[in-house]
Image 1 (cartoon, rainbow, N blue to C red):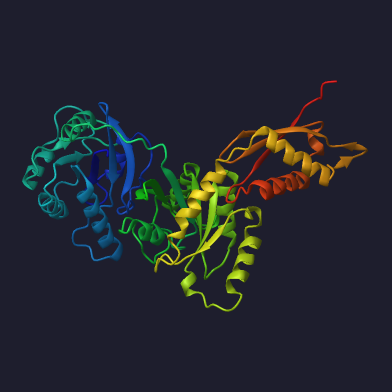
Image 2 (cartoon, rainbow, N blue to C red):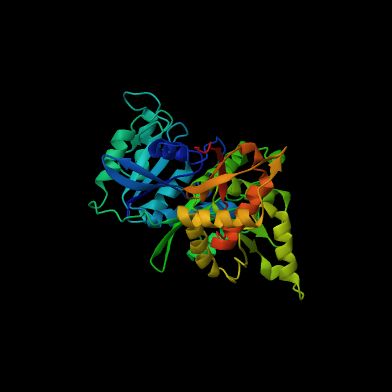
Length: 440
């Protein structure tokens, strides 16, 4: 287990900028608006050969009454409980505030190593006199840094690493299954992740768009490790008017890129919308294993053919993704949530499946014998042989006499024959058509 370092403090003191600087990539959303980072954001970082997990938290507003603010306080306290070392950030330009004092009082009770980080000391040399005011917090010597320019970070990280427990052999995490939970806002993505994890790891609110970053949560079941990536809901482009939300959509798409399996969340009360179709389309284009998860099924009034009709509705709305299995759940009550794990394993295995060249060509030849390839102006398509070029998704190369004769409909027919023979449930299949002049 890597040591955990949490960055805490009141809103808008530069926590996310520091987080991004240490992590070495733009992971946390950074914008000059208090309260932008609402959830805990995780990233792997390394200093002097020691790897650790860095957590960026929503700003602590000790006396705020707002529902989101109170949940941000809860998230920050969860991060503090998990952390081995805490970086308490203050802003030297603002001076010491009443909120800083209240946060300091909170941290003094936690019993963890706390380093006081004075941000926005942007000029090298002697620190400004204003920094000495922060000794009144009773947190020891402040560390002057500029999170924007990276000044003072080396000294700070040297001190952080000194508090780490002795290094242990890292566990092999090659067999971790990464699962991205994607969908439009307010479909119940965070509720599902919380239900699986058994703790309020992600802020859940009825306000659409609460999760603005993609958040990784590690979970283990029956000896198998999973990383669940809860993503911001993706809206139509025309409705994205805030910079923050635009970042969130990019983050959600990149979460799909690094996932092994994508759970496409559908709101059962709304059915398949155009936005659901676009999100599923991106998952399909990226070649990811996918499961359509219909949430809030407990709120739908049931009749004799309700599920059958909804299944047809899903197939019609996501007709390019007929291969994806669907499951009908309630994240709120936990109904059928456990059945997701078996499906996640199945679709991941299908996404990584290999077919030997001999068996593959037997199926292709059989398909050609049943339905002749298309012809154009007297010239008929000839498929000499096929081979599998890769997995994730399964990718097949067809060597033919003339590529433009390989009509989309015939390639789709070959795909259906492969699916009929080998399954490939939950995964797209990719075909590459190459011309090869047959040797005489």
